[in-house]
Image 1 (cartoon, rainbow, N blue to C red):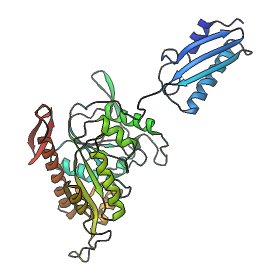
Image 2 (image 1 turned 45 degrees about the vertical axis):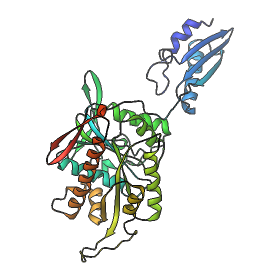
Image 3 (image 1 turned 30 degrees about the vertical axis):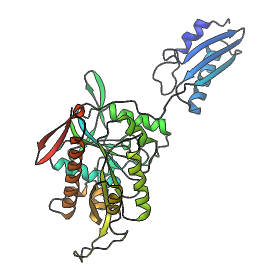
Image 4 (image 1 turned 90 degrees about the horizontal axis):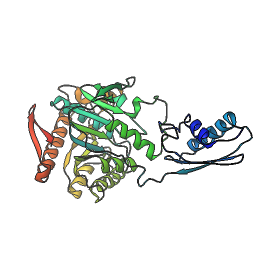
Length: 377
């Protein structure tokens, strides 16, 4: 059978490269098809460097030509990967309807960043604000557990003719997390570009609606996820969580430095000290500084950033998170009062930050439930 270029191109329209959505001809991946006697050369240009995707594309092409045209054909597939200036960058813009985006970060894992995020969110909601959480901790998402929505899945809704994800709601908080799309025992083994693409979808392909505050629960450290989000979203400010001991403070200092660097330039609203002290139930007037005393407060003073408050080491906070009901929801409790004070400080620092913006980016401030809501133009 004589090999024909047009027939081969037409046949290639039945093959789709993984992750592209369109067939390889329609997507422009097929750059050329050359035929010399019994030899067929196909030149491909694809967007992903993943070895298994390149191998699959090559195997699909060879199988197609051998089965449809000639089992004796010598098929060569040349694959080039399209270079990207910044493969980790989330392409995006401000999210309509969201007034303030607060990044909650920690230099070190295990300091309670996600617990603080969850309790800040429910306290803001109790104050009358509309709140959402983006769980950007791709490799260790915990918000589904902390809000008792492990078995929930975002549904698809149509908004202005486009299909969008509807965030899961719990305790009046809108939540999106990679944990909704993976099994509890499944490890997320992704490189930076794949993680950024998933975040991109949760940010810009979701129907967040009107929010006064979106809290972003960042992964520990100062990695590419942080850079992608900070460089692509209009972050109002960052909150850094640390415990008092020296090893955590050293990493917290790096986190503050990252936000204030010239390339990021995100205002730091302040530092929260978690696990500040332990008070036994039988000795309510005693404080035991297990991890050191006022380390985060001293760091805030040294770095000249606000100190937002301290959270004691209390068993009920951990238990509440495990049970899926953040501890700040406990009315008339010590923990409720602690997070009310911290949250009011966060709101006040947000107001202070927004009042200092140039007139062209002026922020409207309205009153809601006795607290100032911060609105952006």
